[in-house]
Amino acid sequence: MTPMSTRIHLLGAAGQLGAALALRRPSTADLVGYTSAEVDLTDAAQVAAALRGLAAGDVVINAAAYTDVDGAEQDAATAFAINADGPGRLAAATAAAGARLIHVSTDYVFGPPPGRTAPLEPDDLDPAATPATVYGASKAAGERAALAADPSTTIVRTAWVYTGAATSPDFVGTMRRLEAARPEVAVVDDQRGSPTYVVDLADGLWELVDQVRRAPARTAGAVLHAAGGGEATWYDLARAVFTEVGADPARVRPCTTADFPRPAPRPAFSVLSGRSWAAAGLTPLPHWRTSLAAAVAAAPDRIP
Image (tube, rainbow, N blue to C red; front, side, top):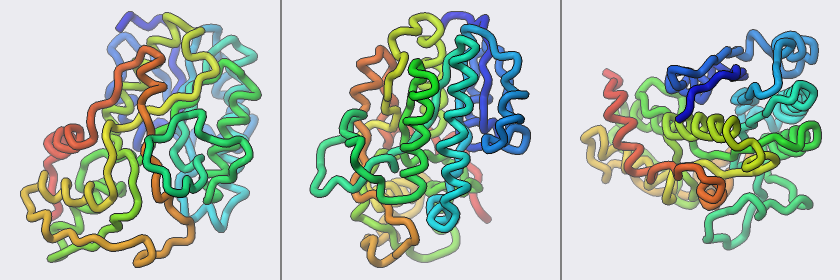
């Protein structure tokens, strides 16, 4: 990776991905991070003040988002203000300064693909289709707003992101805590996606930042998918977590989505293809099973 002479501005620095980006940043990266408390994407004045020094060639990474999928069903205004209007404000700032925006999005932008079995590509998203959740609709609107305000924006969709730590609120952390607390756990086996280790995603985004600096035209306006290789159901992932912590995976039993109704419907199939990422000259993220082992090994903490 070549030395970085431009500044990298990170929104959502205290979040799961933001923290990993800060931890994994290259030693040459001039990184300035803003937490959501410091820069509220719904506040145009705060966004403008934070990015007032934005210069040509700088890169803005937007890892900030309203991520409460169920909460968004009852608070659509807040979800759209953060996930749709916010990226538009950032993109307007990068366009004015001659900088670049990398905006992180989600598999939830896809509507339900009946009977789908092949991994989803960026161009599989039908502009006329409506995502199944308010959260997904707000993130899809954010993609459109960012690209409209700054056509050089790069959109990066990811899915099922986790840290591997037992204290984390993500799925892997939850399974680690439940393994220590319950004799068995029921996990849905009819939702299939792409488990993604946050460290792999952060490393991939830093590679993208470097490419944006060296060959800016290559990913200008691109929509890319960066997610763990392979595919799994939540049940598959839970069994693998149990295996990695030395527990019997037979203690995980399968169930259906209908057994655990939620306010926001989860995608039945949202496996993301890495073809667009590789075609852009970027290193594919490792297979999810390999990364899960590395994640648990790197975070061996257990719930007493």
